[in-house]
Amino acid sequence: MGVCCGKNGNNLPSDQEVVSLYQTNSIGRMRIYYPNRDTLEALRGSNTEVILGVPNDNLRALADASAATTWIQNNVVAYSSNVRFRYIAVGNEVHPGDANARYVLPAMQNIHDAIVSANLQGQIKVSTAIDTTLLGISYPPSKGSFSDSANPYISPIINILRTNDAPLLANVYLYFRYTDNPQSIDLNYALFTSPEVVVQDGQYGYQNLFDALLDALYAALEKAGAANLSISVSESGWSSEGGNAATAGNAGTFDRNLINHVKQGTPRRSGKAIETYLFAMFDENLKAAGIEQHFGLFLPDRQPKYQLTFG
Image 1 (cartoon, rainbow, N blue to C red):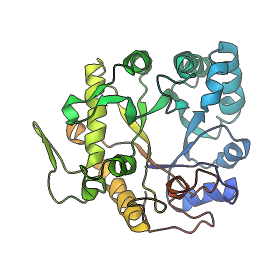
Image 2: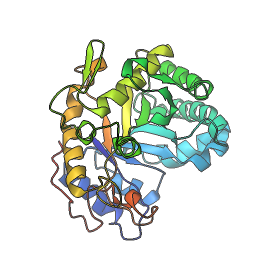
Image 3: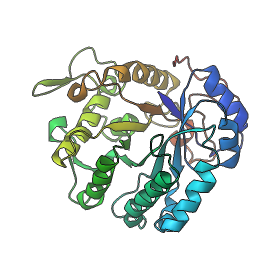
């Protein structure tokens, strides 16, 4: 398990305090969304593994190979002696119709080449973080497939991930799936609290929506010729305030159950632990008002909203 650490707040702890809070709570992995100097300095010597994001507004520039080399030198090589970079996430939730979509693939290739040039390819993998809206079909999970509009975008990305033995990063939000369709999705199914199988899909039985969505993605990858590609869940979480079913009780239930559940894998990938990053470490008061501000495990004063056990 890891935890995502955003900075969209004006009342957040210092970077050193944040890193210390990760260590105190035995959170061994952190996702950050851009190369913030103070954060990277605080991570030196911490032994915390890091997903470093390339912001979407940098993608066009990094489609130039020399710019990508400079980016890696300044933001990775300069810290790599004592910061444990795990992945570079080139773009976050870029959609096929976005203006930056055509730059994701060349930016990924250039960032990968720059990492190889720095002889860090054994340590750092390059990927991009998608969301589940790229699925045209997600139910039942075995029918999972990418939409016709997503296929031309995602297929070459899948190919580069396979070539470089890197995972696909996926942001998987059950909160929004539930609140967008509460008449069809039971809250217990979203919170991992269903007492029995809810969806029987051939040989596979699903007691929770997380497994169903992840296996729909795996089925889509199989149809795209990438049956052996692994998925790391780069964001998942539940809001504690500001909308339907957004309570601290539900958020705590979701997060605790997710932590316990990912050790066992999904029905399609049984026994294969799922690398997962909870979103997010803190409530962020500069995000859009409402539910988006309340995904934090901790308040900005570093007090936990509910008890969680990592490690």
